Amino acid sequence: MAIAVTGPTRAGSIKWTYLSTLRSVDLCRAIAVAGYFLGSNFTALFHNSSSVIGGFWSVISGVIVYDDIRTNVLRSAKLRRL
Image 1: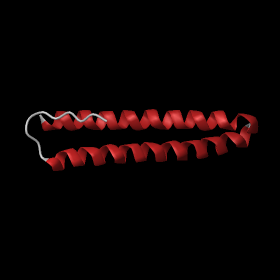
Image 2 (image 1 turned 120 degrees about the vertical axis):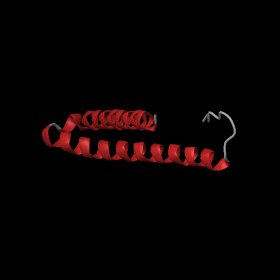
Image 3 (image 1 turned 90 degrees about the vertical axis):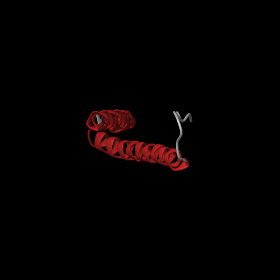
């Protein structure tokens, strides 16, 4: 993991960045597990043999939506700071 450091910083800001990254990874992992469980069970109601594919599609959709939300939040926070 690379941490970009520009100018003098405090150790607390690097620690916060690291914890923020860990929190993001944990949230993405939780979205993936919940998405697979819910997607495969929902797909199994209609077609049991393709329930695994439904679970995978749910994981992909959840991770893409989470990444998009995170990107837009960071972008709007940067614009508000200006």
